[in-house]
Image 1 (tube, chains in turn yellow, orange):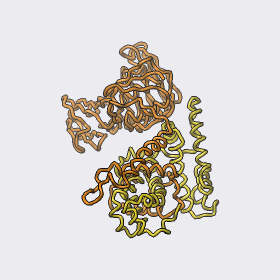
Image 2 (image 1 turned 90 degrees about the vertical axis):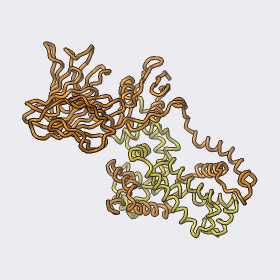
Image 3 (image 1 turned 135 degrees about the vertical axis):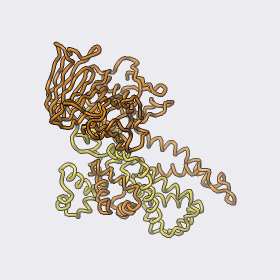
Image 4 (image 1 turned 120 degrees about the vertical axis):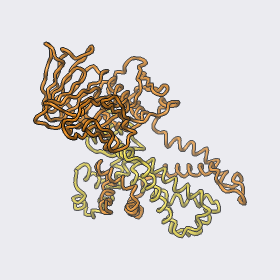
Length: 201
Length: 402
C-alpha cells in the first residue's frame, strides 16, 4: 500500500477536487483500513464500523471541492472518525449496545452439553480456532495466554518480554480481528445463542 | 466519574473484560460532554498505533469503495449552477459502471450466508416487552404505571404508594391502624414490573401476571394472591408468616426467595426455591398434599380442571435455578424446553398468538437469548434451527414444519 506521506498531499487534494477518480481511490486505499480498524475496535461491530468508515469517506467525497483547504489530511480523517464513532455509539440505547457487544464477544471455553447442538457448535469452534490461528504470531500468543490460560496482562508481559501496554494492544487487536473473522466466516445466529449462553454460565 | 475512571472502563471495554454493570456506567458517559475528551483520547491512541490496524481486508475495502462511489452518483444534492451538469461529468459515467458492479460485489460480500426471507414482508416488527403494568386500588380506580410520573402516586389509608423509577413501585407503610384494602398490580402481555410490598417484600412480575395484596399487613399472617409468574424475595418477619395463593395452591413462606410459575395455560404450577424454606400445599381437603422445599428444589403441581385440589406434587431435588430465573434477568432460556412452552413464552412477551400449521414440530431449542430484542430479530435466530415461522397480520405467528 502506498505510503500517503510520499505523495504531495496538497496536490492530491487538488486532483480529488477536480474529479480525478484515481486520486480519490489512492487516498481511500491509503486510509480506509485504519479508519475501519479503529471504528471496529471501538464499536465491536464490523457492520457498524463499515458504516462509519463509509460515512467518513462519503462525506469527504461529497464535499471534495472544499477539501483543498485541509492542512493535514490524516488529522482531518482522524477527527472525522472520532466524531462519528462517538455520535453513533451515543445513539445506541445501552441495552442494544450491550446485546451487540455480547453477541460478538469471543469465548474460548468449551461449549454446552446438549448433544444435538454439539455438531453445530463444533463447526463454530472450528471456525474460531481457524481465526485464532490466523492471528499474527505475537497477538495469537498474547490472546491465548490471556483467554486460554487465564493469565493477567502483567503475567503475559513478563512471559513475552514486552510492556503491559503492548500486551493490551495485542489483545485489543486480536479481539477485534476475531469479532470480524467470526462475522465473516461463522454462522452469526448460532453464535449469538452460543455466546450468550456461555456468558450466562 | 473521573477521567481516570473512564479511561479504566474504556480499557476494559476494548479488551472485552468489562462487566455488565461497568458497561452501563461506560455507556452513560457518552452523554456527559466533559467526558468526550476521554473517548477521543482513547481513539487517538488507537489511531496513532499502526500495529493495531489491518483489520479490514481487501474485499471489504474494495466493496466499500464501490458503494461510496455508487452512492455519490445517486446523491442529487450535487451543486449545479456553474458546474458541468453531473450527468456529463466523468464521475457519472464511471459511477454508472460501478453501480452495476457494486450490485454484484455487494451481493457476493454480504450474502455469503444464505438468508431466508420468510418472515417479515408485510408485518411491522414487534418490540420486546417492557415495564408495563396497571395498578388497581381498593376503590377500583386504576392507574397505568408506565405513563405515571415518578414519585408519590397514591395513598391508601396510611400507606403511600411511590413510583421509584420506570419499572418499580414501592409501598410505604405509615402509622399503624390505617384502613387496609386490597390492591392489584397486573402486567399485560409484553409487560413486566417490580413491586415492593408494605413489609419490604420484593416481587418481580413477568408478563401476563398479577399480584393482589392488602395495603397493610395486619395480624399474624401476610397473604397475597398471584397469577402468572413472579419471583419473590420475602422480607423476614418473626411475627408474621407469608402465604402466596396461586391457582389453588398455597405456598407458605418463611423469609426466603423463590420463583412461582403459575400460568393458567401451562399444565403445571412450578415453585422453585432459591433460598430459605417454603411449604407448598395443594388445596385443602382430605387428599391435599404438602411438600417442604429446600433451596435449589422445585415443586411441580400438576393442574387439571379448575383447581389443584387433590393434585400430586412432585419434587425435583436439584433444578437449574438460573434457567428458572432467566426471565428476571431479561433472558429467554430455552435450553431443553418443550417447543410449545417456548411458544407460550413468546406469546406472553410479544403479545402474539401462535398457531400450528402442521402440528407441533419435534424440536427442542438449546440456548439462551436476550429478551430485549424485537420479535423479527428473535424469529430470525430461531429460524436457524429449521423451523419455519410466518407472520400473518400484526399479531399472528404461524409455525410450519421444515
